[in-house]
Length: 219
Image (cartoon, rainbow, N blue to C red):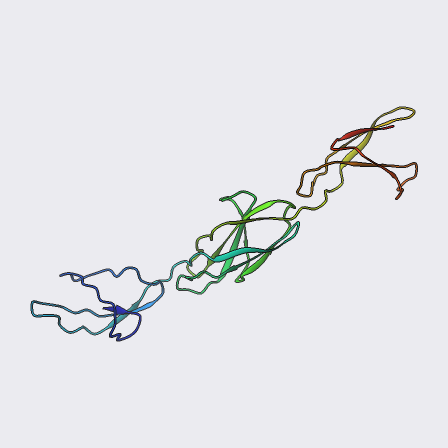
């Protein structure tokens, strides 16, 4: 007979045959159980022995639940989640987030976020999908990752093109070339616009759309 309540008249019973030892299974981690045993013969069941008690050991916690992205920007993702339904029989001491641009990445970046249920990932790339999971830790160790989720940072305007140069000149033309921006803002470049003037830093410079090309001849 066993129960989590002392002297429980409705304790769970299990017949163990004519054996002098038995393993109780399916118990809850870090929980005290009250146990007694009785013997039976052809006449019937005898009285229970003096009840004893013992506790199961704690284990690592289960997976956290409800991981979600609550706010997105071009470089950040705000996340929240819930504590595991099963803490393994010991208090949760902290959480670890794992994130990567690759799905199910065994080498995902990890960040310890303390004993909090929300966190903001920062310094991310714009317009990029991130795959994210979280684990809970107790005094025994780190539990399993929750189901991985994914979400994308927002796109922004691209950074400035680089390497603008004049490659050929005539009396009436200038041939120009340049390189694509180092950062496309998380989206494909759709075109370039040239600005030219006879005045330095002219806010009213003439503009010309040159399509998605990396060279152009001003005429």
